[in-house]
Length: 333
Image 1 (cartoon, rainbow, N blue to C red):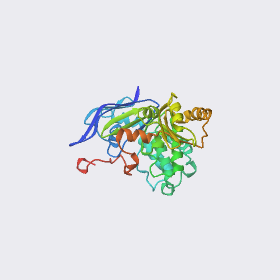
Image 2 (image 1 turned 90 degrees about the horizontal axis):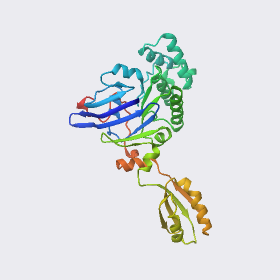
Image 3 (image 1 turned 60 degrees about the vertical axis):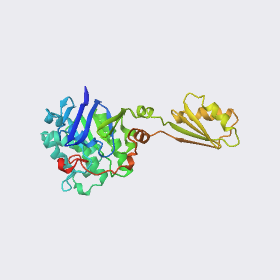
Image 4 (image 1 turned 30 degrees about the horizontal axis):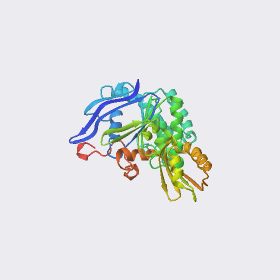
């Protein structure tokens, strides 16, 4: 059974179509990334999956339950970490966890055991009695991940969870998510604009643009769909570069080879794996290789190919999907 499934999902705000026939199937246990520029439909999709708004048409199922007809059941199965920091600064870390556990009617003994377990796992057990106002940004984010897991959900939904964090805190959050996924056998749905985050964490990635899914595959599968490949540049001074290029083009991994002065510019599948064969072959031909550089294909290249623009050019708005983003005020933002 799919952990999350949408079929021809549509959401309209008057004349604005925020989602235009979105169909997804996220298997149980998958770490699924959702990439897209602002206004692409990411927030709207998450708001439907978390039962905050209803679709105009189509079906959305979460943990096997209909997100419209079985809203209470869906909410019991999901943990949510919104983009904005929402923990009350005037409460302690323990109080935050305890309040959320009470929302799910967990017995007192179970609440305390689960809170203690989660705060230990996110490295906040010693700070449980301190006000959240005294926590750093990274600590607050770790607390909110723990808060989203207090009721042992089957699915964790995170909206830009590391935005605004320093690189060290970001990597700590990555490690936590990977650990919780393995321990609790979670399905995780993540929206992010950090390409390295999606590459590091996600099993599958979908790119959404103008309310439509324009690409969906594993990270490696997406890279194979675009014409750009890894580029290896080899500098071979005082050698017949044209002759070398003719030989390079015969290699199975090579898709093209151009000559620029004394440098071969080689486009290849799996550039790092191709380098040893390139170097050995050119040396056997008598070439003296003075420099080798590798530019690997990235998820950013994939994003540009499918959307026509880099995601980093997009303004990243620090908003919560509890309010929504990109929705005109008159349509109920």
